[in-house]
Image 1 (cartoon, rainbow, N blue to C red):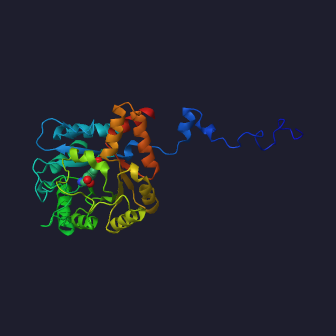
Image 2 (cartoon, protein in one colour; image 1 turned 180 degrees about the horizontal axis):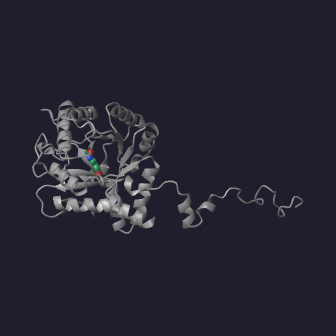
Image 3 (cartoon, rainbow, N blue to C red; image 1 turned 120 degrees about the horizontal axis):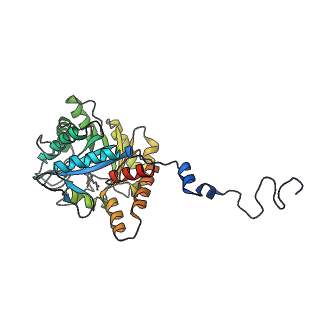
Length: 344
Ligand code: PBG
């Protein structure tokens, strides 16, 4: 035309009938997509949950979590060293004791499996990876609940707090670098902070499982930690999935007021709305736990050839990170750290 543009085309715009905006331009080719990506997973952001079982001489496979095992003390060391080599940021330990009782004595026994294994980890990988421990009672009680029971069979919140303080001290004595209380008792962060400080462990941070929901996705974990409740369920202390985000924000605020150094949302994939709201609200690191059922779901579908395993794993973790998780607990941590390294 008169202004020098192509015929039928106004100087500023596309030919009539063509889109002015073409987001697809930035999707043409893997190199371009890689350059413009702005949600990147990093191995250091991953935390590997590990199980260590007392009294076994070989690792015990967990049938509902193919690829995950209950470690012996020696295979735990090896797997922790592999996580370090892959660049994983942290490990969180769960103990599976041989003997369980009503008060979960093994949880704070200095010779209990989790304490022994923590000391093993400190000697094997100390300084190279953050050594954390789950702090709860369900793996150690014969009834499988996360706290002490009253005579009527209810979970006794305040008596449980005292036990949590004792467990924190036992884990600290064994060399834990960060404790992660998961029992959802009211006041647990304050009780644990007070116990740690009273024992001279003012430097041990608390990553609180703050917004933890009563979830069907914990199913496989109960096989992994042999901790299914023998009666009832955990809905009396874990959050109801049918409550909106306000309750999660209240739990998070309480934990921060009690001294939590980092907060967690759990499970992850079905709770991305909660994760985003928490990440937008707090000024501490936010963790998300991609739980056993999330793992099992993808592994089972992949084993059937119903989805592309690696692609789906990376997609779930990218989405959890995109929703606001600074760190992610995932049973795939070592494998994914390796994948990330190999893909650049
Ligand atoms: C409680 C605890 C559980 C999980 C982590 N810590 C079980 C529960 O709350 O019922 C579940 C983790 C998973 O499913 O991967 N100690």
